[in-house]
Length: 380
Image 1 (tube, rainbow, N blue to C red):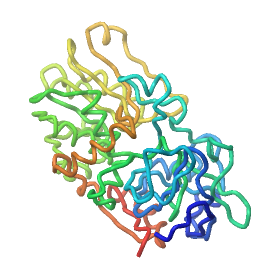
Image 2: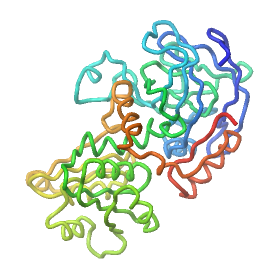
Image 3: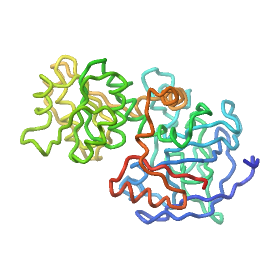
Image 4: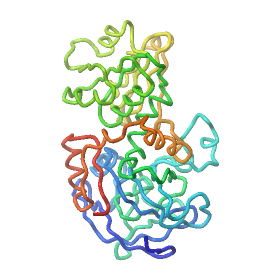
């Protein structure tokens, strides 16, 4: 990388000018990093459903023009004032949430929900000065969840950057910066199934399959996949899923079906759909006395979770999780090491790859429900 520290960089970025319209590759100006910020050269990024959701303007408070993207791997180009634990050339994963290391959440061993840097989908500017680091002809282009990785260069708060093993292939481990870690951590860090236990996974998209992968790593004896799309079942076997239930195939509620085939319920369940009915089923299908259900999916803003209090009094536990309870800077490097030691398999999540110039193809694949993760190669 030619040294441009302290200077504006001109590069290509995929700009969303309006909701639901194809992204346009534009030349943008990327300002140098301010205090506690780093400028990254993005080498690989991938498309996550969250990008599509906000691009379609289904989230609250749509904001355009904007540069989306938050699952990525890259190299530090330059650092702003006060950044001491990163230097140019470091290999990193930018993350949509952060770890300031100073707030009560960061100091807690139980939480990863940083007060300063937790995900904010409404904010399109940097915390430091309330301005964007992206512009076209002097007009600001807004950031997305503090990462905006659909650009050859981006500026990110230092607390949202995980420094990783430089030997890790960025075209593979880039997918660990969002969905895969979310599902994996929901199982390993929150549900914590014991060896030989039974686990139900609701929703067999990328996050759900990562949760299944976590159950496989933990040594679960039965991993039951629950999905309304039976076409997903064959693929799910690669991730350790041993049997399948499609709620549409049964007249009774799916929680009753699962209780019947597991002698009273599963030991652990992980819900990865965001559908409130699936959440209720995931909770009610765990065994009384010791069952734990973990909610991962993000529900509709008006959704209400209803269950009889006896389900809790009979010693079932309901938990929620955010980003798999991983603290980005402290914990993501160890998730990358799980891949490096072949404990975690990442390649099977990557089903497509396109050059940056064809980024809209990645959106087409996801909108059609084809594949799991599409890698977008920034350099050809």
